[in-house]
Length: 247
Image 1 (tube, rainbow, N blue to C red):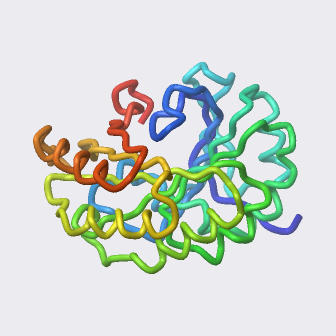
Image 2 (cartoon, helix red, strand yellow):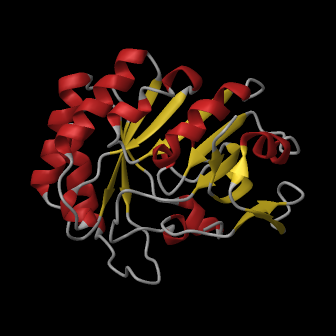
Image 3 (cartoon, rainbow, N blue to C red):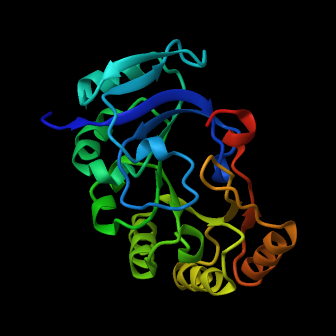
């Protein structure tokens, strides 16, 4: 295999977001992202790191450092000591390194499930790895939340592509005090045009060193009611990794 990956860290933890919250899995966090969300909770995924942190032994919260970039063979070796049956491929944005993913993911046959956590924008790239993943956790990036440009058409194409493959998918909407009803309504429109039964997670943005806003319970409840009027499976789930001290 000719490609190597730039990785931030490898660790074991219960999942902290989405429909699999609380289920223990192994996380491989990839470097680089094509977004700069103002509430980003993993800024370490945005920049280059000379080393990759690897929890050793798994579940110990102790880490060793491995030089970047990491070959597919080396990554397989590092993962061999993790016994979880679910692998979370996260970031950053993993699809920024899709060439590596398309070579490495076919080797992960021992996993019961491979979960891709993505910002749901790079719809052409995701097609290359759909045969090798089982679950997609897809963000719909709300411009009023991120502070960036809208990506509605990209999100729509991404959702259609994944649904057409038959892979399990759920959608996550990260909301802040600045989130508008219009952005929530546009997200509902995108989801209902594909399948209104797709689980939709409303996730209040966590506070970070650079992001201090907190959405009110009243506003959060309003978004939940708005989504529930059109979508069949709406859940409000905070980011539990923050509560557990994992991030």
